[in-house]
Image (cartoon, rainbow, N blue to C red; front, side):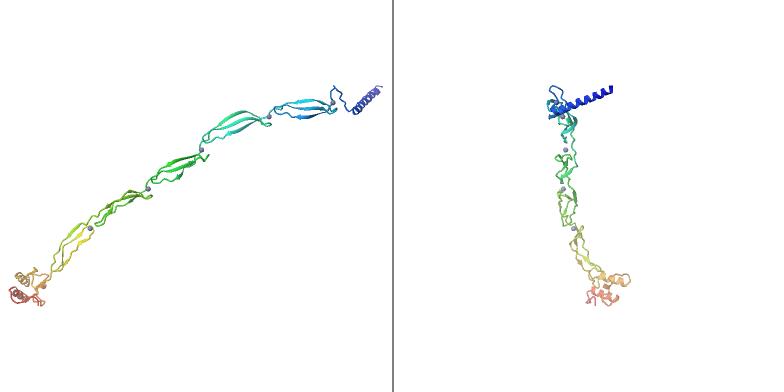
Length: 309
Ligand SMILES: [Zn+2]
Ligand SMILES: [Zn+2]
Ligand SMILES: [Zn+2]
Ligand SMILES: [Zn+2]
Ligand SMILES: [Zn+2]
C-alpha cells in the first residue's frame, strides 16, 4: 500500500509539472507581475565602465521579455605602469631633464611626475688641427672641434715659425776687386737678416824689385815693381844684356891700361887664372903667350896695333 502511494505521489508531481509547462507554453508569459522573474536574463544598451567612469546596461528577462531595470557597472580603475621620458637632452654645457611618472596602460592617464636632472655631458674636444699655417713672422690658427656637437669650435694661435737663418760667408776683397761682408737671410721667406756690405779692394802692396847690374858672365835687370800679395807685375824688369868682353881688358873694368898689362904678365908667370881668359888672347891666335903681352904693351903705349885679329 505504501509503495503504491509513493508511485502515486510521483505521478501527481509529473502531472503538475507537465501541466505547468504546457500551461506556460500556452500562456507565453510565465513571470507574473510583481514576482521574481525566472530568467534567463540578457543585457542590452551596454555602456562600458572606464577606469574612472561607471557604465550601465539594461536588464531584460528572456522568459517574459520584460525590462527589469538598469544596472550600474563599477569603474574598473587604472592599471599603472612606471614610465620614464626624456624632456630635454643634456648638452655639452646645459643639464637635461628626465621625468619618471605613472601611466595607465589602458587610458593613458599619467600622474606622479618626478623630475630628474641629467648633468651636462661636457665638451669632447677633438685634436688641434692647423687651419691657418703660421709663417716666419705671423702666427697661424689651430682649431679644435667638439665631437659631441660640431658647432662647438675652439681656436687658438700657433706661434710664428721664426726665420730659418742661412749664412752667406764673407768674401775677402782682393787687391783690385771688392769683397762682401758676411750676411744672413731666411732660406724660407728670403728676408735679409744681415745685409752684406761691400768691402773696398785693398790695393796692391808694392814691392820694389832691385836692379841687377849686368856682368860679363850674367845679364842684369832694370829695377821693377810687383805686388807682394797677388804677384801682379806693376813695372816689368827688363833684361840688361851681359857685358861684352873687350879683348885686352884683362881686369874687366872696361878700360884698357897698365893694370891689364900687369895682370896678363902675372898670368903668364903662372900667377892667375880667370874665367874671362878670352880677353887675354890679345892677338886672337888661340893661345895666350908672350906675343899677347907684347901687343898689349904696344897698345897701351899708343903704338899703332890693334887688339884682336
Ligand atoms: Zn520575466
Ligand atoms: Zn586608466
Ligand atoms: Zn661641445
Ligand atoms: Zn723667413
Ligand atoms: Zn796685388
